[in-house]
Length: 141
Image 1 (cartoon, rainbow, N blue to C red):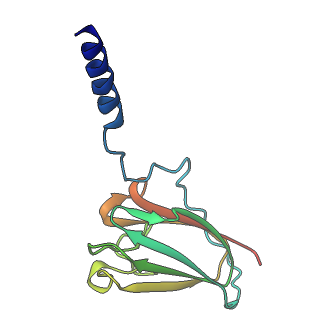
Image 2: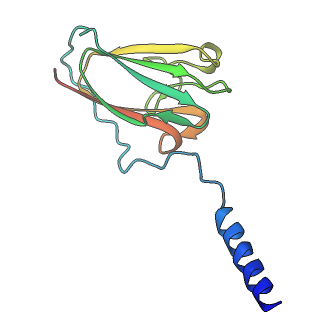
Image 3: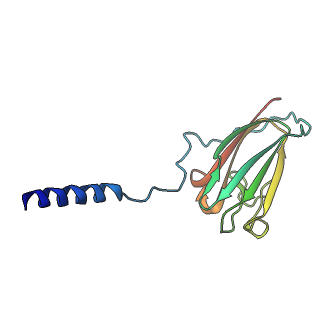
């Protein structure tokens, strides 16, 4: 009987440790979300493209670095509508895409022609500093 109790207790402890809490699928805040003012110098398109996936609650990758003239292509691979809104322009008037044009399977792209840091977020699922947000650092070619 004692052996059965020990075996049962051991099996129960293994089962309990195997079932942990679900991990948080939201992206952690960046250490710095300051938007650096874009340079006054612009560069022509260079033919390069970098993809960012818009999944449910995340931009993947969250942080990218590209050379000026690179096209950044966002793909909504999630099951929900999203948007891509610059942190310093929440109405997306200079660049970005609102949810009406960024439903599941939609894409949006922009060529970043000026060096600087561009912080963006999904107003539906994040803020400029938490949850669904990202940044693009554009360097000189």
